[in-house]
Amino acid sequence: MLDTQQRNFSRLLHLTAHAWRLAIDRRLKGNGLSMNSWLAVATIASKNEPMTQKALAQVLGLEEASVVPLIDRLVRKNLVQRVQPEEDRRKRLLLVTEQGSEVFRRVKIEADALRNELLANIDEQDLAVTEKVLQQLLTATGAN
Image 1 (cartoon, helix red, strand yellow):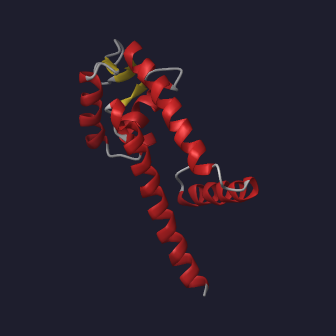
Image 2 (image 1 turned 90 degrees about the vertical axis):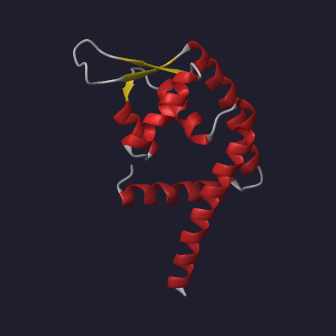
């Protein structure tokens, strides 16, 4: 019984994460941003200091080679800029542009609204237990 329950949990976790991502993609489609784009802009915008491409890749759970085309698109859209620090010419630091900050504010409102809609009918105690379990799983996987 426990083995079946664990397999079902894994399946539901995967399906829920995928469905959540698709719902956000649909909601943000009008802004021309995918979830990865939005997460990249949000991550860079929320840092007090510029971050490296490598650090962004780690936060997003992407390979560094995968994050380069993502950043290229964000640079072309004038949402992010790459800055080369004087002390290390091999490094590229990422900053959100003024336009990127404005998009971040607008998209955050949409993402927050969607989250509120999706969680509206879930009991607060159930949500607290779910959050605790997800945090424990993150810790157990070493992702935290």
